[in-house]
Length: 278
Image (cartoon, rainbow, N blue to C red; front, side):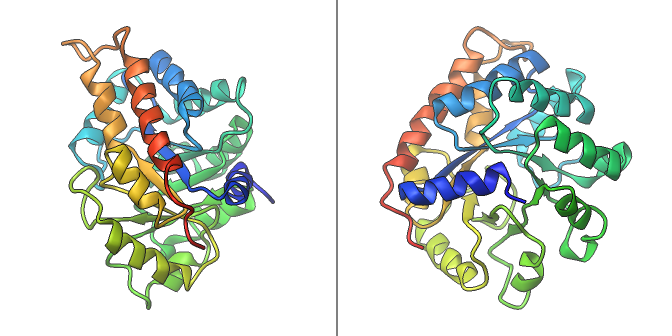
């Protein structure tokens, strides 16, 4: 079964350019503004959208994304409302790939079968579930693949050649390479080290490899796009959103534009990259 993710990467390969993948937190700072932001991303140049599922204990996330999750939860965001946000987004956009990224707990509470059925009908294309290792594939990964969703796995600098085959076994859509050891937003990605890591992972898989964590500027996004099949930016966009809020943490007239403008600048960076090597 071909997903929107597969289609998009095939198109980008023909165009000879890397993907620009954007991450925002669902429901941050409120449901209405969040939907406007998600709708604005493709227009500003995002090729794939990762939508964070707010969760109370996001262990892989740095302070910015943790705070975004808390703002969303405070605004009443739930997994059910996240799926509704995807449904609303799909009314106007049936082509942009959309991936839900988060932790297993909210899905487990929702009920795996019900979640997968609802995710599929709402227009979700893939899942990145940070705290489910390959050893737990029967929990969600295999059922998700059977339901027609991509299951995207994280590889890190500490994922060695012995571990990689296990990580890649049931991975589909793309591989998300975490460029730095640690939490999101912590340090800058080193393009040369990333290039070596991507080349190593490519020896094990034909899937596109997108690189995230530590990419904050158009220049950094371009440097990574020259080494990989995609650059992922999250923390910088979440920070742009946060900096546009009023003293009470509410959206202002500037909020949607703040995220869209940075997205456009980063997209230009990615599009300025020399063709990513296969």
